[in-house]
Amino acid sequence: MTAMDEDEDEDEGVTALHRPPHYNRMHKTFISPSMLTIRPATIADAALISRMIRELAEFEKGAEHVRTTAADIARDGFGAEPKFRALIAEWQGDPAAFALFFGYYSTWRGPGFYLEDLFVRPEFRGRGIGKALLAGVARIAVEEKRVFMRWEVLDWNRPAIEMYTALGADFLDDWRSVLLPEGNLRRLAQKVS
Image 1: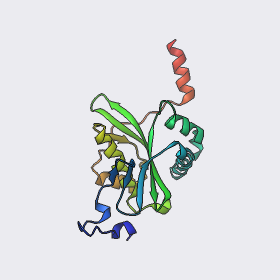
Image 2: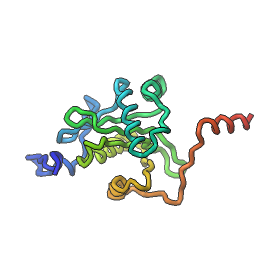
Image 3: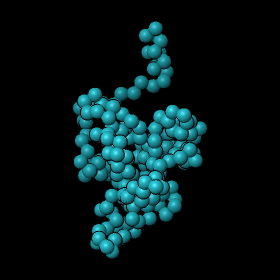
Image 4: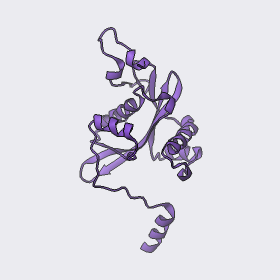
């Protein structure tokens, strides 16, 4: 049992694990009634986000494919025209996890979010941090009148698949992800002219 599992609210008799994070509008942070704080990332977090992206890539056995740097994260996430947003989860003040997401539009459903990355550092797993981060992104989506979140999961990541299934996520097995990398993107762009 983790500390989160044991955290009881004396007034309500509800464990912290079963309550959604509370959004503190004044401080713009998500606060769980345990040792977990979820807050919006700032430019000061660019190096941390970059490190966790690399840690996630190592977990996914694809570290050699990471091209972004902390400078790219700072420019692309916190510059004049941010390309993404991120939430940082801290456990007792230590950086434990992050979620990186951006606006996405489905011609079938309407506005949503694409969750590019959700990563919990190994030493912090099993405490409900991933679910709390997902709840934080979901809360922002609802506040902004977005109607869905979309993301991908590797087929061998059984714990994540089980969590997403328990949350009621749909798996789009008939669809395949497609990526046109930069070199091929540039070649295709030249064919149009």
